[in-house]
Length: 180
Image 1: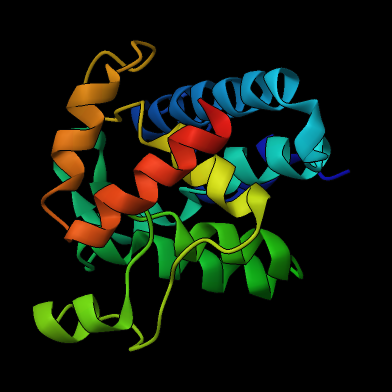
Image 2: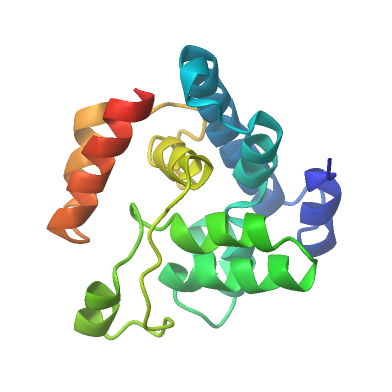
């Protein structure tokens, strides 16, 4: 078991606005994911790992430029997953790192990365394990911009995923069949 708040506290000043946003968002994602696990014991999902990974999935946001949430780093927001994954790998958490890098949208395909030209590694970064998929799914229901604890409706989440690629919506629908 790892102390996720201690890890977050290494990079985010406790009590700061960005710390509060990150922790509140991550707790909502964690709680939704754990609720899904409780509803689907037949899936035999690693509960402890999901709780930890949900708390750390957005740890890379401080590297990005997102002033509304208090992040003033030099990178694009879409890079937060891979940046957080690199940080978690350095901390010896490779499994948690995969959740980090694979949760953007419902994962990013190599083709999407090539098409958009985003400064990301050119490879598929799509959730593979049930645990990765579950954190990714739960994350889609909560915002870091406003109404942090208000769960977004399914139809709104689905429509916003259309900005990525058609496969993103298809992956979300598959995740919803598994966890919803």
